[in-house]
Length: 164
Figure (tube, one colour):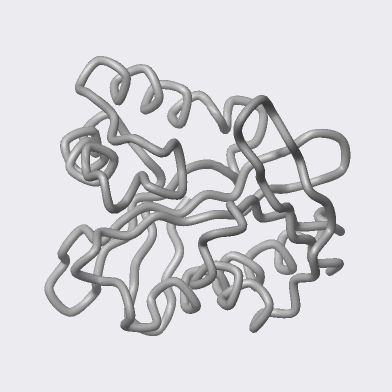
């Protein structure tokens, strides 16, 4: 699976992307709204394997390494993966030096376009913690609507949905 957008290229994760992945998920500022804490090497290896395995049943989905086209720099990850019954989750995580440059919106728009091109997806879901107002803004700008609040122990998550 390979995608492009205006400034970015998206390549399906392979084992060769682990060091890029670890450089992303080991940063506190990146993981603040994802797991709450940065991942150590061993936990990152386990989660990376989950990401590699996420597309076992669907070759047209999975986790993607995202690169800036102009310099071929790794900037983060994107995902489009099955989620529960009849839902497909999209998401992204970016290195802080690429925040505020419109990349989150570009990734989200490209994943929506890709889901429509597949023709088999009717609902997209995006998971976000309520404190992450920047990501909520990205989602609502792309016409996602608040769907539900999920409470698990001490964590609260908001799910946003887009009907295709």
